[in-house]
Every structure is written in C-alpha cells, then in structure tokens.
Length: 287
Image (cartoon, rainbow, N blue to C red; front, side, top):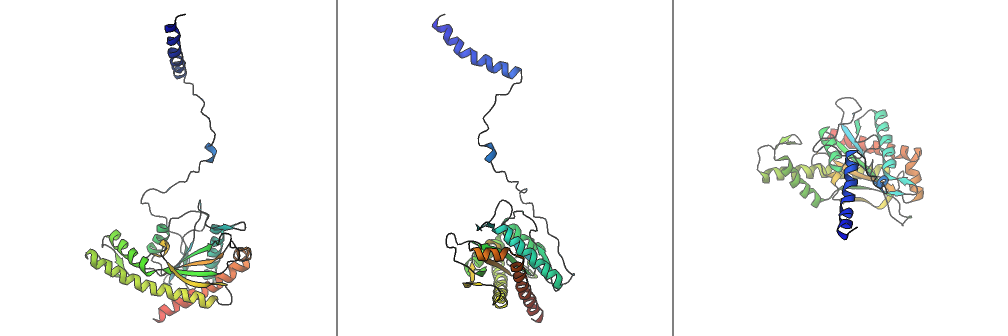
C-alpha cells in the first residue's frame, strides 16, 4: 500500500468512526472524575424579594425582628464541633419563644430553618414588616486562641452610617417615606440629608438598646472586655430601624460553645434579651 493510501486511511478512519456513532446515536463516554465534588446552589430570581415570615403576637404591639446569622451553605464560624449557623438559630428560637410567652411585643424571625439569606434580604424583611427593632444574632471565632471568650454588641459606625445614607437615598431615588416623612420629590442632596438625620436618630436608639443588653446581662452573660463596638456591618444599615448585632460568644472556646448550645444557656440568653427588649419599648412608650 502506498504512503498516500496510508495517509488517507489515517484521516478517513476516524471520520468514518464518528459518522457511524452519530448515525447510530451512540454517546462517547466522558470521564466523570470530580463531578461529585461540584457544589450547586439554587439562587433566587433577580430582584425577587424574600418572602415575609410569620409575625406572632397581638396586633398593635411593637415588632422586633430577630435575625439568626448565616445559614444554608454558609455555616459561619466553626469550632469545637459546633457551627455558628446552628447555635444562633437555637438562640433566636429561644428568644422568640420567650417573647411569645411574655406577650408584650410582636416577634418574627428572618429565618426559622437552615436557609441562607443575603444581608440585604435580612434588612429588607425588617423594613417591609415595619419593624420597630432589629436584632441580628451571631457567634464569633478566635481561631487558635481558644481562651478568648465573651459576648459583645455591635452598632453601625458613624462613617458607615453616612455612606449607607447616601447609597440609600440614591437607590430609593427620593421616592420613599422614612420615619413617617415623605422624601419624594426632593433633590438628591436634600433626600440624603433627610436620610442621614433619620439614621442618626436610629443610631441613638440602637446604642440605647445595646447598652440595655449590657446592663441587663451583667452577672448572667459573660461579656468581652470590649463589649460595645461599632462597625460597618451591612446587616445594620437600615436607616429607619434601630439595629444591633449581638455576638453571643466565641465557639472556639469549648466551655462557651457548650454553654451557648445548651438548653440552659439558651434560656439564660432569652430571658436577658427579652428583658432588655421590654425595657427598650417601655422607654419608647414613655417618650
């Protein structure tokens, strides 16, 4: 056989093989190595608002929205065999149950199961429900420093407050109501100023609630030496809902993690926080 014939065979044989596979509808097996390790996350439709949770309590009472941080594919901090998302959900449920038994406020959870919500969804739920108070519950990690312990409260920092006010005014395009004031039709500068004024008032109320948590928890909850802090946390940026993030403790500390995960620890947390919430709203009514 000539060299030309050999070359023709080398070219035509693979083409003939592919043609036969196509005609007979045969599939070429593809290696599946690694496919089982692909993580797929179902995302919500673009701009689709999160569904609103059920609100428990008598109509007309002030509403507190409790947010258990993380959830779903986001476990949060981890340590000593515990995951933040599970610990804080247990704390949130305990507080909700305590507030329901007391009957002095209405209460809703941003999540009551192992689902994931982005920060904007959590804040949006509170605003859409016209919440009077927003409490986000988390647990911290100190890495290898297992001796670090103690709870702390976070409110929005002043710098982050101004930046958030500008973004909020721009996003809403001056077509919203804020703390009962119609800011529609105002210029960008005026609407930003109005949002900033509202946010300053909201920050004052947030700081007051954070101080009440510290006061009512003294002797029951172990606090970090720097227990009252401020930061640029997205979940605290609602301009018209007083908001506090509560770091319940360090789950990298074995004793603290066990305490936070125990029924007794959850009950102590719930009683302290419910008392702080009752006092906060009592002061609002007096004012």
